[in-house]
Length: 190
Length: 111
Image (cartoon, rainbow over all chains, first blue to last red; front, side, top):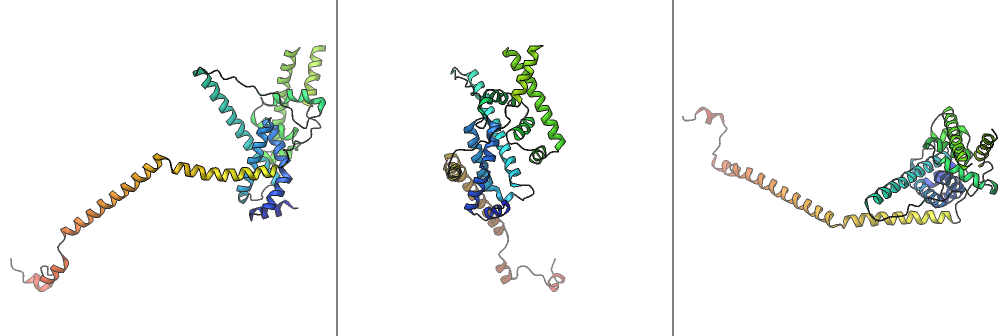
């Protein structure tokens, strides 16, 4: 069914239209979230949050962009908020540990394996995702949208509300930074 | 030389390790979980509002505000009535013609 019809129906409070929207775009939202967050539980949490926001703020969607573009923007913004919240909590726990006697064990997350990675590439992709985590936010978003969601530079520029040449530059910087990080990693490994 | 070549190869292979990636999907019954979350948030909203309203300091603040409002109204009213008391009774003035505004009265007024 045409997405504009579904949007109009949802604006009128049609639950069936909402169910269809969730079914059609849940993979897009979840896959983007898991790519950025690198944690299945967090991605599920953020994906749910995204659809709750879609339901509540569909009246603000003016149709100037595609629904998928709007969904990408909400997902990225929620995922980045989630990361910032988590980092704040980590910092707070670290400071708390400095001033209290309680020695809470600092838990390091296990290596992340994207569920869609080919079995042979699992180990390498885990190393790559670790390196992606160290990129600046914009580079990380552009890289994730391109490599994990398979978006073209034009589509990424629509989502990030920037020009195609800016996306090209972001991707170039992301790749060169990743190369540096990976070179260091493999040199230490040898 | 060989070492740097092998590092370069490994880096390239790692950078390409996401090629052919399949999209990840959430678990089954995702829609049901979204609806449950929406219901929870709605419930939580009311719980937050009621728990906030019933907090002792909020109740105390509301009571003090109402009392202050009452006191200010009482003071304002008493001020208005005092002003009225200062003025002579209009009906009495009319009845006994204490105040006269006719031109004849002004011109024949005794010193």
